[in-house]
Image (cartoon, rainbow, N blue to C red; front, side, top):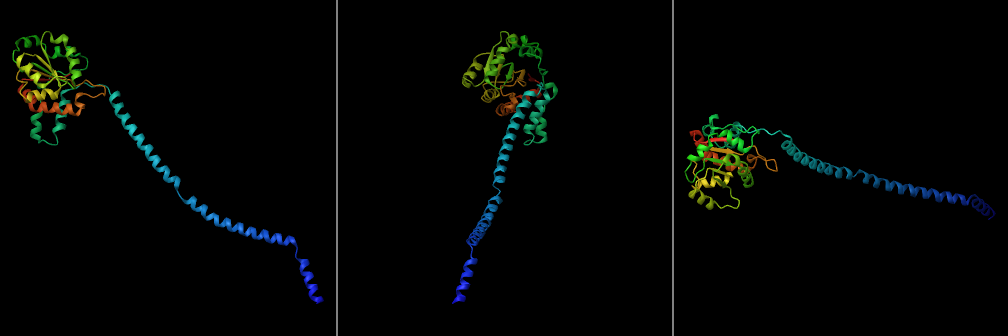
Length: 277
């Protein structure tokens, strides 16, 4: 019994409260390290997700597309605004006809649409007003005006892109036309039947209008081109969008149709002369 008491006292004396705290700290450290080790893989998984890369790529594409669109618009406007105006020449009209009919016509048919230099009047070199240009290309206008007595026809036909431009040209030819009669040949506020009645009842020397209305009058036999001597295209003038008459698809198509169906044959026969103002 004495021996047992001795060993128990020795054992209790060796146990120190600081040892218990050490044991608890060690266990706490182990649990903390376990928690840290458990949490580290989750952090790594979050970092592996390339969220930033996926978000940055479409933004760059959108910026690049917006920049590309802006560059295209700016480039077109720069070309139109900064390009020096070049006067139209007969070769421009020839090239336009060739490009328009090149894919759908044979070589022989395209040759029939070509016009010799003798079919053209001197082109405007951008130094003339409309009246001075008409005086240059038609020095004998007074005689032609007196001799013209045919109804449903005009001696001179002027084609431009719009009704407003037609009115501007009519006002600007005051010094040239004298006392001759000018007929408005466009669709704005004027019915085609009214124009046909005017042509049938009266004698007109100059017709100014759009290709679409002139083509419609010719097709409906309201306007006859047998007495026509001059056909002027308002080639060089540009509108607010810097477009010439041949830059507007509808005007371009109607002008080419009128040339093909009615004017080119008369030019080849020598009865009509073409001028580019």
